Image (cartoon, rainbow, N blue to C red):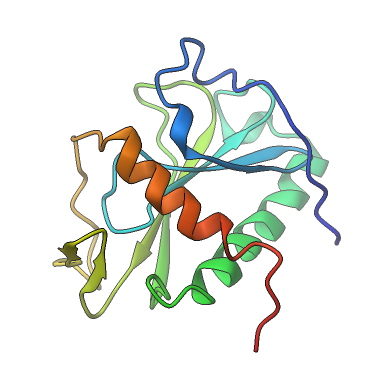
Length: 155
């Protein structure tokens, strides 16, 4: 399945509080870097239509989701600074009712990025849920790293 790019209005961020994370829009989903870096490169996949529950998704939305996840996973595996060992996905919708999935890259060994050592201290277990929003600057650096690999051929 070919995944098309599509620019959409970010209805989950009505007040534009989180502008630095946007990466790419697909037909039914949008991929953004999370402001809460549970582990390095944590991201969110938002539904482009307002839904509160997975059960509200159309067949087309359901069919596209694993392709979007695979796209992101393959992209991250090509980035030396990231190259996760595993991916976890959480969908809860407790605070933000707009349907979205948290993508959490998992790492057996620490990564170094933006002058910081990032350790996944709970690899193999549920991740520690960060409650701290990172700066636009850090999120922008992660976005720049990730977007620099979009379209690159694997050597």
